[in-house]
Length: 448
Ligand code: UDX
Image (cartoon, rainbow, N blue to C red; front, side, top):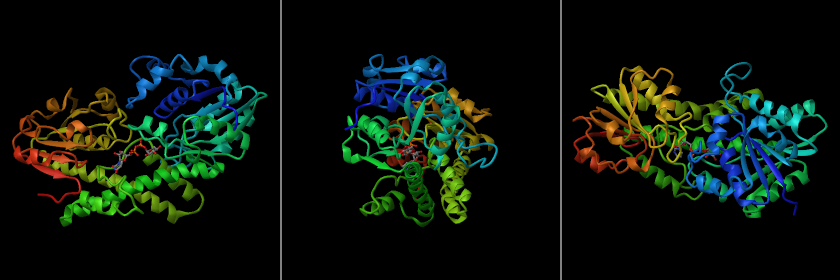
């Protein structure tokens, strides 16, 4: 068994870096864990009672470790921690490139490369550098080059250790992962990282592979998950036209043990920071390696998702006779305050463009941040409760599956007479909507 690393650093205090390091610190009290970020406001929030990330169970874990062996530090003040670190995780964003070769598809590695330069300048001795962010295949090669070109005496081993946590269940996923994946060729470095996770993860769940397999496995896992959502969403449209019910179809399909029941919920399309970005990165990789048929196959998963969002937005806009629409749910899924790539962004934009007024409510998303992401938010307002959002509207779009939307007392919420409720998640109480005399449309259910 390899000895535990004594000191680790993570660059990037976002939705992955923050919770992952908090769990490592909580589970490994003997390991000093420093999380760096150049965003001073985000670091201040991690050091406060109002963490920048909402995740069930996170505040308790941070509370137990922070100040003991977990520190959140502004990047420029973290040079000593970098110099002392045995292991440095890179957990910064890898957004889709907006310009240059591969624009619109390839992952932008500029933040990762900047991290590598920063590490090369400040690390001392032999340091293990771990890719935690999702990377295109062979990104580690680029990191190795940047480290070697900028090193001032230190030496490095690069490992890939992609994170599979899902937002909203991050703490459970970290504490009881299906698997931890470590990719690399240097047995001692792999052993050192393995020893960290082995503190709480059963050994058979710690998988080791080559570097390139680890990088591709993460993209592949996300592509498979996204593909399931696009598959079920494609059938939701067919159900609406044929009289079949998507919930019933999914339940039957999911009982086949080869298929399994998870990730078969029809929705207004998948959102989140990963699926779209990772699929596009995979498409670009396939094109780059001369595989246009494979690229087109995965591109279709993205295209279907865009189509699903468009068709829902058009239907809600058409239903809103008085041009006033309530949007319930801005987050890309329940139990998170994250709205990156959320279906709500596209649906709200489209409703505003078609001349509707939109009043939105989400229990966790900060309305002002969502409004600023919209760009032109003319006609968009945020309500403090679902009831407030619903007053007088002619149509309602339920876009996130928050529990409170499943139990709304439709007869007394004050929507306009003759209003239509569009349930984009299949969660609302259908009987209550009908008893209230409202129109009802449920994704994947026959209309009428
Ligand atoms: C995903 C992967 O699950 C995770 O392993 C990876 O590390 C990061 O990307 P995340 O984006 O946090 O995690 O959420 P996930 O639960 O996968 O949901 C993604 C989107 O798909 C959400 O918008 C969700 O509402 C939607 N979805 C999911 C469906 O519409 N139907 C489903 O059946 C499942």
